[in-house]
Image (tube, rainbow, N blue to C red; front, side):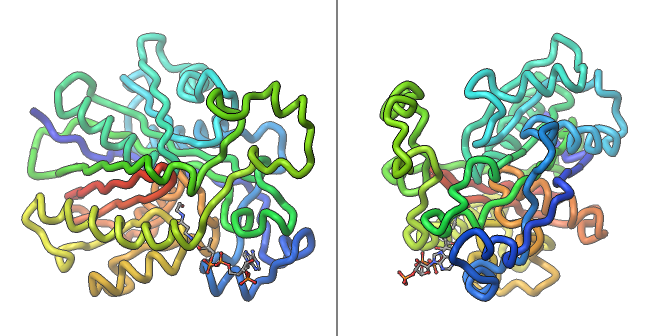
Length: 336
Ligand code: UT7
């Protein structure tokens, strides 16, 4: 048995900054409401047709591979987490294989776990590396939300929150099993599947032909829907539980955390967790103010920014935690 460790990180966000004031020009919202309820000041929206979920993921991956100090041909497996794939199928994993010109023997897996997607992806990569099956696994989280949001007042409860961007990590074999990823913890509760969801297109309820036939401007089933307060209440409970589960499994306590990177869902959620575990500002990293909620991309973007800022050092205990649509949630405990 081996451990896996994060050997390289990278992120990519589109240049185009959309402020809260920009949004207030197209819907009934305002900077004060958005900042007070979510902490978000601005987010990025793609404007170039060449920017896609895959292309952003590829840019993030290039940096992660370079920083890992490996050749791209040393990548054995790709894990791509997103809720906003370029195509309904195939998923973006194979598009990364094509666009990065990775060898044809590489496997490509698409993960559909929304805000928990990156944590799920890390867990999958970790198991492959631990078992010795693969040595280097590329894990990408990327989202292009902006083209699929309801940018009218009807959609304001959701649309002001989400932003575009991508992050990536290269996981590699670590011989010293006291270092690297110590454990991962994944959960789900499908009972609440529709509380944060996008129903159409989907074979179960509304397929593309139904939507075309209806052509009903009041049909919101192809926009994301979120029961915000219900999701918020579940988020704070599940975040706390899954962080404690990971710490307990490794005989650690919240005081041992050097850096917590929570999924950037809402600054209020991060602050709740920070207070609950009595962590100081240096022990929690947030960047939702700049990028909004980038779903599967939020943890790798935040992790990369924290690392680039020198806030993560060798030997640190780093905790990743996510909660989101599904509901799904999870945590990763890392000795850096
Ligand atoms: O990433 C996956 C996990 N996601 C989360 O964890 C998100 C969890 N939920 C949340 O972060 C919060 O529930 C939101 C930020 C989505 C919403 O905040 P809230 O404090 O729960 O607001 P609310 O939905 O209860 O809405 C309060 C009021 C409503 O007006 P009335 O009915 O009180 O008159 C909304 O219509 O705020 C109104 N509102 C807005 N006003 C201005 C909703 N969205 C907006 C908006 N601008 N963008």
